[in-house]
Amino acid sequence: MRSYLDVLAKIEETGVRAWLVGDTVRMLFTGVQPDIITLAVDTDDMYSLMLALNTGAVDARGTYPALRGELFEIPFRAFALRGNTIEDDLACRDLSIEAIAIRSDGGVVDPFGGRFDIRNRVIRLTGDNVELIDADPLRILRMLRLSAELEMDIFWKTTGDVRAFLDSYPDRMRNIPDERWGREILKGMRRRPYNFMKLCDDFNLIPFFLKGLSGLPDVSELKKNDRNLFDRVLKTLKIIQHKLDSNKIMQRDSFVLAGLFSYISLKKTSEAERQKYVDRLINDCLTRWNIPSETITAVTAIINGYKHFYEPITEEKFCKKVLEFSTEAMEVALEFAKCVAEAEGFIDDVQDVLSDNEWNLNQVLRRFRNVSMETEGQSRYLTGREVMNLLNIKPGRRVGELLENLDLAVGTGKVTSRKGAEAWLKAQ
Image (cartoon, rainbow, N blue to C red; front, side):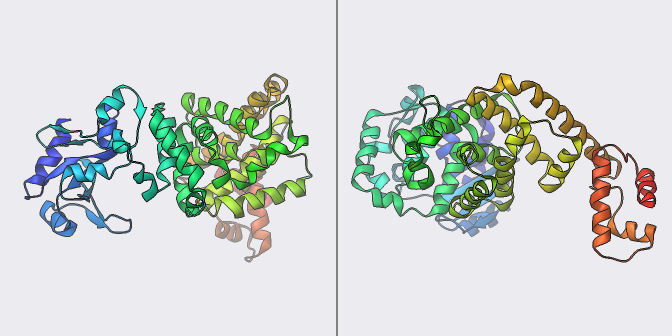
């Protein structure tokens, strides 16, 4: 705490009052070390403050301009006080657990009982003020995200107020821009995807942002063991959540999003029809949510590829998949296949195949990583230009074909060094 207070003191040396606020204070009172601290400062002139502190830059892209910088090796973001006093500022914040401030002398400003709610693990609208939702309905989703992430209960009055708002003003939810839905959903899915989506379902929010799922429970061919399709999605997300807690998963965003949209691969359709569903997923949802293109590509790879892990896969096929998508995407697809098999109850039937495939995949990945280590980060032993010089050929399709075949030779262990790559090429 002392170093955070030093940041406040340093700012106040410029003549500007400052407080720790928001997620920073909530995290400190729940025993979590914040990576970056959030400040409220009593000035609208962020540029003058930046010059006085000799650090940072002013970010004016959002609703509220912020000074982002670093003091005492602690990253910070400072926002202008909303209102005339710190109490006015706290009254504008969504939830009581984040409507707490800490002064530079260590004193706490807590006009809405946020510390009491933290101790009792309750999430409540600041001051029980339902107008906060009316001002920005997406605060509902943020409330559910924090409830899922912090495993806190939602206060009974807040629950009633939220349900009443949703019943009375559904158009307000429908009018929320897709990219705002996407940002908050992705945050909610990263740590507690099952808890978050279960809460969204309990509050009947699913139809607002996942229109494709709303009609699926009525499709009889998709029912199994008296569980409708969305129940199966939730079961998969529950397994994924456990996996996130116990394993270091690469590409977490693509991993959890694949779980959310895994119903696409459960449809009893042809490969061509399933691909149309995947395309619709990308065009109608993830793109509108403004999800990064590389994440969308990984999600598509996982959804299209995970079921292949239930059958024996040769090293050559693994090479092709790794080269088509990425090392990380294939590793995540394997973990995803395990999660679905466990959720669907057939993990024992495919355990041996999954273990064999995992071994084969790891061998392929090990060989590709050896190339990177030996070439100081390059993906190949030889570049296209080196291939042309070695074989005395001109640029063209043939060079690309040789490089692709060389990659397969590396992945399958036929080529293990630069000299081996040169000899292999000459033999072609």
